[in-house]
Image (cartoon, rainbow, N blue to C red; front, side, top):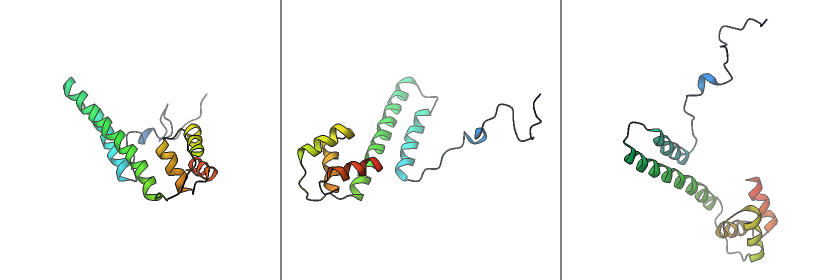
Length: 125
């Protein structure tokens, strides 16, 4: 025997089922642009050739905006300094943190060439 449920509880319902279809609110303009580009992928009633073209354009736009927002945010927050960095430190960041050479160099310069501080900052970010 099961207990009587309140009238607002529906059989099989889980937490948040009523609000699953509501759009999420994004904080930043870049996130909204990427979300709109991805949402355009779901547009129906197009012929096959044009939908593929629109889909690839939307994916490219979304990926570009996602990649640009992270790198531009880092560049604005951490202007590069004129610091000499060791190639061994750059290679260490490339291997251990899976960064590009440019990104590893920028990270080291932002932390005055200190590889330990740079790694800690990357992990904590």
